[in-house]
Length: 360
Image (cartoon, rainbow, N blue to C red):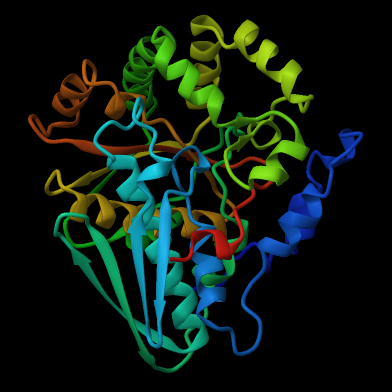
């Protein structure tokens, strides 16, 4: 396969970090933090460096709901239930998907370093992921090199289609036992999915508890984003960067059902396709598997210069989910993730907390 990575395309973390930054009067160290955090492994990295790579994975609201326990030749990933989003994710589905994403990043980074990973998903009182590491030949590749560049790009895409070959590469990357991937590229299908997105989004925006929870995780200023190292930095969604006390007022003024629905119409209309991930069973072990599958999909997309972003409203809103499952042809099942994809410029990259903050 021809290597088509972002690095091969001449991009770098610094280049991605520069997107949009020139418009900001002060960044309060934000760019420096992005460049420090989003880099590949150096020579002879320790387990903490593998954890750093794991934390660059996709996760809901950038809550980073994970903890890592290190041993001599193993890493255990545990849920951090103090970082739950109980309104949008009451059964911790997204939380366990996020753990799966982190596990996949760690496995790929370990392989690049020359360590094979054997994964076991514990299903006891608290589901966790045990990763045993052993020496192997180093295996670097496009997915590893894409880790620092992967992002959820919440913007309008260019509306162009994705080639059949690229779709095949995305499907192959996402293959995972216990997980099914459905790809939709026909405009009629995207329009039908948009109807479910609008129904779900309308219900969420009408829920004051949902709106408050979302606002709690938004970081309006670079200073606040650097201070917390988590959350949804406004610039990463293409929104204005303002002092926090102003941002909260603007959010309440402009975050309306009509405005949000119009935004998602433009997002779907400009996308090349939508991917839906479905686990064979509705339990934390399969949610973790969905996370692993999606992370590889997202990394492969990144390597191909294809952006992606979540449209999970149809699976988050209980009043919408059954009809969406029926439309997908899986009545009674639970679709897990709805992901749009297409091409667009990068947005500023999100931050992560220090590795020391996630170790136990």
